[in-house]
Image 1: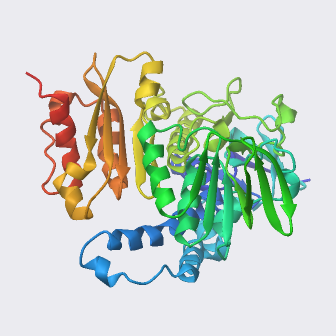
Image 2: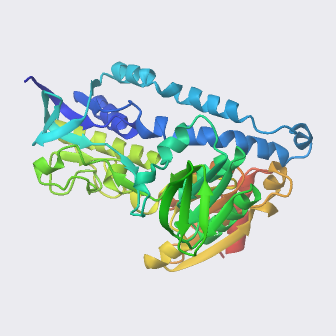
Image 3: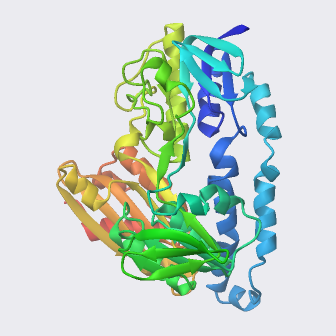
Length: 468
């Protein structure tokens, strides 16, 4: 057997692993990255990029149909084959050649195969043992959860991977779940003309402000989807090539395809956790520098930590992890206090997220309910986005809503939610206000340009009340 030494070994070459490796390399370390599938990972080939590609064409068509002048010119139906072809282009037809070339240019070595931790600072790939002088970082991500529903696993349903990589739209699609993946794929496939049925155990987009799920659910119904709320599947079977889903309210749903989007599980069953005293298949819990609890040499970033299962937040963690690994390895100063360069502080109460349904849901920080649970004294300010001049130019009869959650003791914003067409581009201003803890009285001096949708900030502040 051959042993090769590196300063850092990263297991998983998705966007998170790539960023850990890149930051550590820039910090002067030698880095090996190990990947069992495609370099670029879930986001590039089966999640963020292909899913948004499938959604974008329908969004653009409906946006044109909401504006007089372009409405009259937008008389055709969506070209579904062209949508799938565009998705194939964006995923590079599931080739990772360009990503591999980027690794090479960045000076990061790549090994194909499954990385198994076989000892302290030791990773085995096939028959080759690699050792790390300083650290190993696990960035293996997560996979779709298949809940324990009678007959579900045997029926071989779609997960998010099959939904985003399909090459044609089924006539009908049943979706179990009510989160982001379920809502986005329901929007995409309903746009394709597929007869979509959503089966939601509680409410749609339950982690968001309640009005978000209500507005998205109403829009899905307008697109022709059927939405069952407050019901759960009791059994799944295959009948004449179709899926039959039995619900606990006595209703049954039949569809050509079935998508399960009920959560995620960590990809840690085959990476040798048992060899270092950890449970295979478990999440890897870390401190804010992304170091796994109880280990001075083991780090993890991205979904596998169960901190925040979002690509952009995983990349944020990766930057902190790569930098702190390099700092600790070279004896540089470590800034691991709140909001320090080596701490993923934003994971706790400053996480931005966009759900690319139609309308979009863009949120950051805490919902009103979450803020109350955390013990904050809050005030909630709501505003109808349709009343903003910029929104009336964006679309005829614009419909949307904004909410601002304020910490009344410190007079800073804890959370903001926007629901409406094209609201995703409003989000970063809210993120800066929350991360920067900008006082409400200072925000009055951040003047939004007229007539833009950003004028909603002025309207929210007016509704809150000007400081005396």
